[in-house]
Length: 125
Image (cartoon, rainbow, N blue to C red; front, side, top):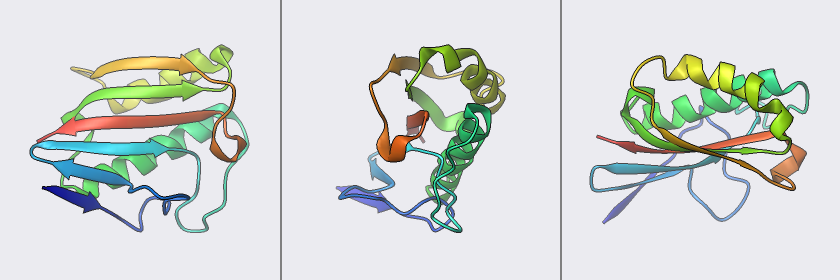
């Protein structure tokens, strides 16, 4: 049986999906982008600030599920420009200082709302 995870501390879904879905001991978090959950405004500035916002949104969804970044076992990073990899990696790395999860990083032609970075995670209890 699946349980829907929803928090006002992360952006509301902008389509027919849930912020996260829990099944058994796994939590599958939808990709987060640089939307301020308080204003619902998209931040289109520098990729470092976008990534910081994205990771805070990921943390908020995990927190609602009773988890932290320590529970994350797999992430996928989507980048509009692979030239942003170093900057995104630096911010991302602060959230996983030890025993980091498995990860894929993929360059894509575009992302929702025109942002530069999106991160999705899978966590385990």
